[in-house]
Length: 408
Image (cartoon, rainbow, N blue to C red):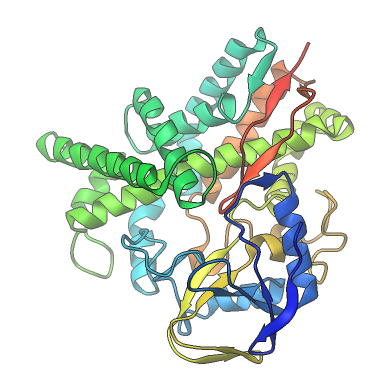
């Protein structure tokens, strides 16, 4: 495990060479980030051609995320400073970001998620019942992948039977862009092109046979003016928005379930506690989101020269705003590497981001996770990780590559 180099400085800051896009053993990324955060308040990472400033302490991350006038969402990933296609609404700054969120919010509100809960519970219960007698499941390619895929397609008003077509392509997009798995950048581009073509066809279908924009998200995006702009999105914007929602919706819940089940498999006392008292699942999930942050960084690009607490940032510099490192900052969270769902400031984590750009799907994610865990543990309360397995995690945006579970 490498540590930040002390051999040269950039603006008085240490330089680190760690490439966080690479696949590593489970939890190694968190250990590296803890070291980065404690070695220096700021550092320069030269693992990409352009390099980027790393900001990893909680208060600094929260402040930087909120400084929209200084740091733009035009580039939202520190690994990339020339995104050809923006992620919508992620890549927008206020007020455009706020306006597009108002267009999408009704489909991701607590009320909308509540309407989806009966389907979520029925599908989770049926899936667990189907695999129970197998006495084994590789969670990352089984239950944790299939369950959120069906629900997200249902939320978007799309056929759930199309799920298998998306599964490997979503993985190819992340794997190719983050150097994890077997997908190349070319395969990632081809997968992204397929997803775009899929939604292009769905737009044509909606235009030929309109649905109800109050219950059909795609129809709403096609036909409803963006609040405050007085116009609807053009075709490219519609496709970019749907691509963004699909990638975010299918990857994060699956990835969260992987880390959660890994934790529970290794903590039978905690597993027994939450299984006995299901009312504890929401707090358990909240601490999981803090401790096992999947989106390790939020990217920004400097709009102009900025002095950020003595850090000399130049116009065009990329910033890494370390959500995962901030969530384990001892200045904010006592004993940060300890799982403690009874901690007083549990809700202060930044696992869903901060401020106006906080994850639009956070209510859906929480509900999906609660239901999945309740239904699984009602039928399979005890399980273990298969022996002889090295559990590894994808870089860039964290996910367990494999988690084979067994039970009697």
